[in-house]
Length: 147
Image (cartoon, rainbow, N blue to C red; front, side, top):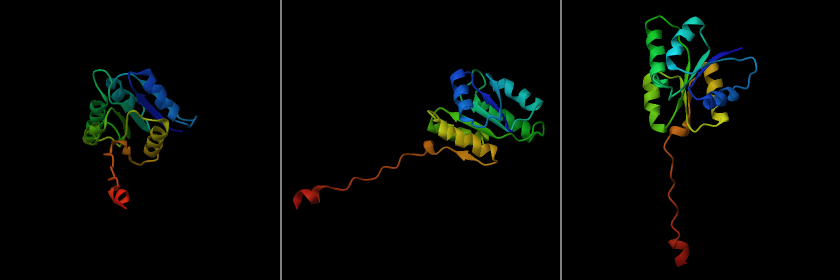
């Protein structure tokens, strides 16, 4: 049985994350503000924190950094963090904030579920949606037209 904290000021985002957790034995705590995360983690250490990048005054990046600073000071244990990023360029910030994984929006339930499960199993999840697209050159058709 896992304990997951889902943080977003958007009910739609929270619902999407919760629906991607297929295990009915998982406990999900919902928070709407970044500043609520540290006390919630201190009160009862979760197995995972899922943070939306855009959360009111204290967003996902700042909340993740706050958790990592408290961890480095010995005031909180390590808690895996999955960030829900707005765009591919935010991957750099997610890495700097110490996130254990991220999913780039718009996300689908499959990628989100994979990220949640990977972090719950102790892994690192890097959504490949942020990678630049590979463009393959189109073969020239002039040889066919000449022949």
